[in-house]
Image (cartoon, rainbow, N blue to C red; front, side, top):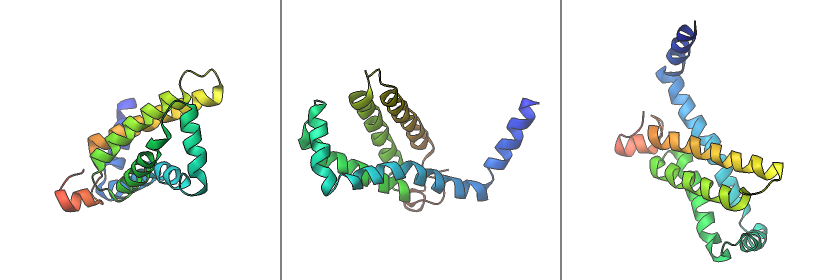
Length: 146
């Protein structure tokens, strides 16, 4: 019974027309959190974020790099450009920031935030393994993707 369910789901999800839609949607959903986080650190959010970083033992001078990684990496995922690199960097970033800013706390919200970061890293690593999919700049420029 489970084999039949597995085969049915696999046939359904691997149809080219559906895969062409799901890859960009998946990239959008993953990219959204990074683009918004980077954008929210600009302007009025900059100083507060820098102070929070310093309070957690991270130099505030790294904030411009964080913004570039979040915005640049998120936008790269969104359009499917350099997807494997962007996903790998963002996975490492998610793990590092999860551990630094949420690890070691007994507060349940912080533990959930850590698990969120770990889950995002897992999804990003899958994207790094599969590539951006057919509807992507990577596919157009390099022939890379599913």
